[in-house]
Length: 124
Image 1 (cartoon, rainbow, N blue to C red):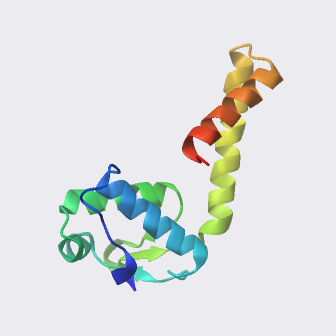
Image 2 (spheres, helix red, strand yellow; image 1 turned 180 degrees about the vertical axis):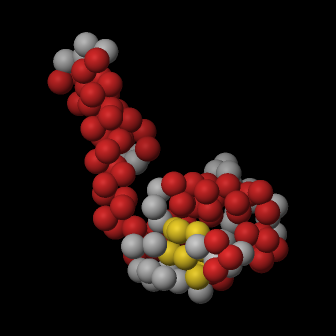
């Protein structure tokens, strides 16, 4: 199933980010179902022609985002990420709102800056 994941070496996007984004999207869409066991870091690196550190960096980011979970020697699996992603995003938004308030920004300015950040990340 992971054969649908490709890395474009000529892309302006870092290989680990391409890998992270594709696994995240496929987990979200169900193409990689909850409980699906991902290849080992070394195995996946060999399959994709990447350095093991590149795959490890993507796995660390995915684990921090709640998309995957590592179960020690049992391997790395797709987690039930929907709720986790929403909780993490809500917590980050709450942290931002509290920080903006401490900085003395108005509600309108805080929302404007947040909207600018979202537009920068989600162009189009």
